[in-house]
Image (cartoon, rainbow, N blue to C red; front, side, top):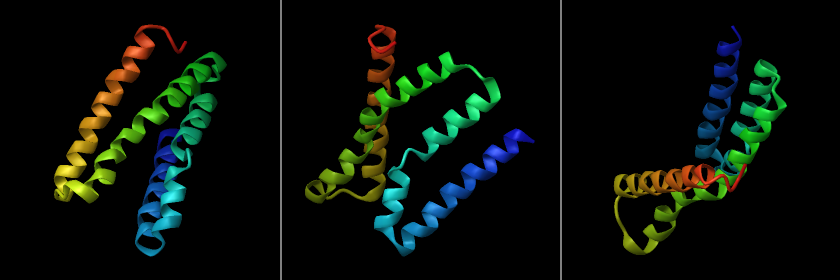
Length: 114
């Protein structure tokens, strides 16, 4: 039951934000930029596991990953000049995210962030 509750809350937030993007894209962008997923995941994880040490590691991982994940938007920003279609831009964003994930993994493997 707890899993279903988490799914429903998360799905509602995503559905609301995507609906709002059609009506008020600036407000929707701000809402999506909020660390809602991080906030919910930390809360849900703590309620479920009650392990402050794991929550610390989780929060540090999120903090390190946040600037790296912004790389997804780089192709959208430069698309103003390179003029490629949405699919190519989106796939480039995913490729940038994969590189960011590799950087994140490397940082933690080297124990720089723990």
